[in-house]
Each structure stands twice: as C-alpha cells, then as structure tokens.
Image (cartoon, rainbow over all chains, first blue to last red; front, side):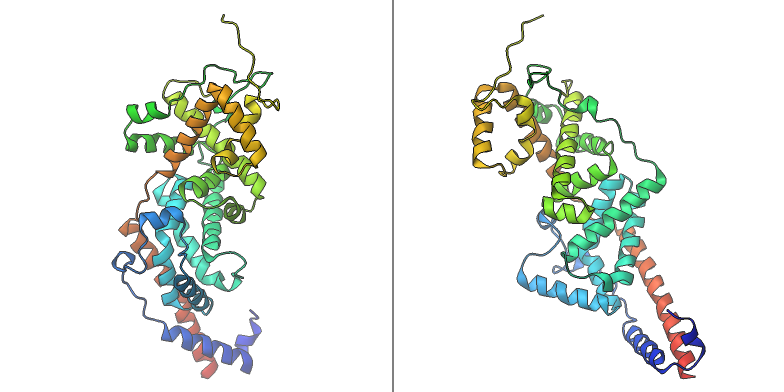
Amino acid sequence: MKQGCFDGPCQKDKETFMSAANHFVSQTSFSAAPAASSSRTALRPTQARTGISPRRSNTAAAEASLITRLKAGNQSALEEAFNLYSAKLYNIAQRILGEAADAEEVIQDVFWTVYRKAKSFQGNSQFSTWLYRLTVNTALGKIRRSKKNQEVEYDEFLPKFQKDGHHLIRPVIDWSDTLDEKYAAQEIHILLGKALDQLKPLDKSVIVLSDLEGLSDKEIAVTVGLTVSAVKTRLHRARLFLRGKLAVQLGYSAA
Amino acid sequence: MPKRTPAPKTPTGKTCKQMSALVLDYVTDRLSPRLTREFEQHLRICPDCVNFLNTYKKTVSVAGSISYSAIPAKVRNNVLVFLRKKMQRILACLVYLASQFTS
C-alpha cells in the first residue's frame, strides 16, 4: 500500500477505501451463536473421522459461497468458517503439539491468517486442505521455535532383520489381542499419545493426518508439502515406530 | 543356542524384510495383483510375518480409534474474542481512513 495516497487527493484509492469501509460497517454484527447449537454446522465424530470437508454437493456449494464471502472480507463468514472447522483444526494442532495451550494459539493464528489471506486461496486444493496446511505449518513453526519436542531415535523401536532378510528376533509375537486384554482403551490411547509425542514433528503430522484424521496420501502430500512417495515412507516408518513402542510397553521385542 | 531355520522365501525369492516394506500398501489394498499374490504366498509359509502384519494393523487401528474431542468452550471463546478485537480494529482503521478521504 502506497503511503502517499493517504496524503493527497487520490480519487481511485478514496473510492476503494470508502467501499471497503462501507462493507465493514455493514458487517459489524458478529454472531455469537456457538457451533454446538447449530445442527447444520456441528461436526459429528463420524464426520470428523472421514475428513472435515462436507461431501454432499449442497454443502460444497455452501463452502464455495463461504470462500467468496471470506475473500470479500465478510466477518460473519469468518465466524462461520470458525464454527465449521475450529474443532477439527484444534484437534490436529493439539495432536501435533501435544499441548492444549499452544493449540489455542495455533487456531487463533490460523483463523486470523484465513481472514487476512483468504484472497490468496486459489482453489487449487480443497478449502479444508488449505486449512490443514495452515494449521500444520503453524504448529510445526511453533515446535521449531519452542524446541520442546521430545523426539527419540527410531532405530531402537523399528523391526530388525538378519542378513538373509529374516526377522532378527524370533518368534515375532502377535500381541494385538494382549494389548486389549492388558489395557483399557483409554490407557492404550494414552500410551499411543506418549509414543506420538516422540515422533519427529513432520512424521507426527503425517500420521495424525493419515491415521487419526483419515486423509489420503495425496491430500497429506499437498498439506505438508511432500511427494506422495515421501509421505508413504514417513507414514510407514512412523507406524513401525509406534508399533515398536507398543510392543516394548507389553514386554516384547520391537524387532 | 537353537539352530536358526532358514528364512522362508516365496517362490519369487522375496524375504521377510522385503515383505515388511510392502505392508503399508498391502493393508490399504494398493499392491499390484502380482505383489499381493507374492505377499500372501509369503504369509502362508511365515508365521513371523503373519504376527508382524497383525501387530502393524493393530497399531493403525488403535491410532484410528483415538477419540475426537470437541474444542473446549473456553478456548473457543478466547479465540472468538481475539478475532473480534482484531476485526474491530481493522474496521476502526478503515472508518477513520474513509473519514479522512471524505473530509
């Protein structure tokens, strides 16, 4: 923005600002209706598991309308986007960060960026993918700055093989039923959550988007800025690490 | 020390190590028919790989079952208050600038 235009008569800029100001004045009311009270916008867990973007065509049209209004700087559109996506994005941020307080900051930054940068959304990916990307990038940036990540070396928890390609430690034990017998579901989730926090941040992002949120490898690749092949490599390695952590927890070899 | 049995190989010569690299695509049905056949042939002769596959699938299923929690009301309100303040500040700036142009 050129500073000079504010100092003197500049008819074009004057009209632009008047138009923008009028638009903002018309949007001053910021509805406070919570998402939970709206059956249209509330996300059920089953919806959440399959992805945040509504699949039906009428909701796709509603999403297109929402994007148009966001690009025009419409304030109520931002709240609508917030009501639709904040819970999902908060969960992703929290899973990646492992801390609720930081996740709140991430969501705050993400929606403020959505408001400021909506015009830069080209529609080359789904709107939800763009939101995921903003969330993951903001969360990863926060981890980089805080250096609080507790990642560990993977090797100890990955399967190992002999020179001839056979499993190094035999027999390999099937502990899949033992896990349920020994721990309640809640305890298993806590165990897995702790193991997740030991993954490298980008690997954690990939596994959160894939196994917890149900995104396809292609969607994840767009979200985190990797090739599909690199996503699959990271996903496989992260899963092997988690498998190893669970095995060790049960007293078996990770190998 | 017990004598090690030789590593089972499928008729195509694939080892457990090579099979483990295919697990990700196998569990999502994205292996080619030829590799799927080889993978399953190997499973028929290698109980270690069967157990490995079961624990891999269990890990994925546990991760997928982590429950979806709602955004806490306090967090929701905090963020909404933040966004409202920011937008009102922008609005105030624009109104001010517009008034400067019109005056």
